[in-house]
Length: 73
Image (cartoon, rainbow, N blue to C red; front, side, top):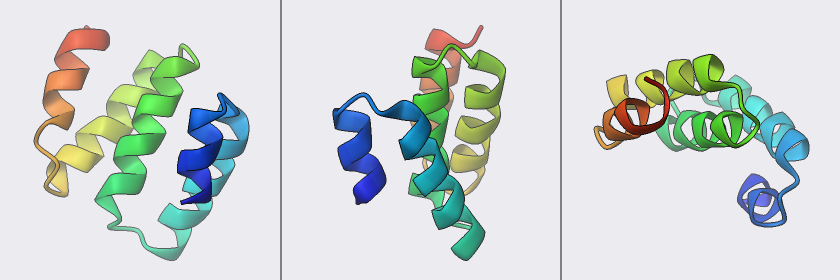
């Protein structure tokens, strides 16, 4: 939840730090990969964002693939 607030405040680096910790604690946390992927795209890391969004898709968030197609190709 803290990462989401930081995203809303455009504190992207801090949000990524929180999302990294969430993934460390729960490696199959699809929403954390999804949000970290979006954040990386906001930070112009398209490759890193695509990797995280792909992982989110593998974990069940199929809409992540649409974001990859739209922003990362």
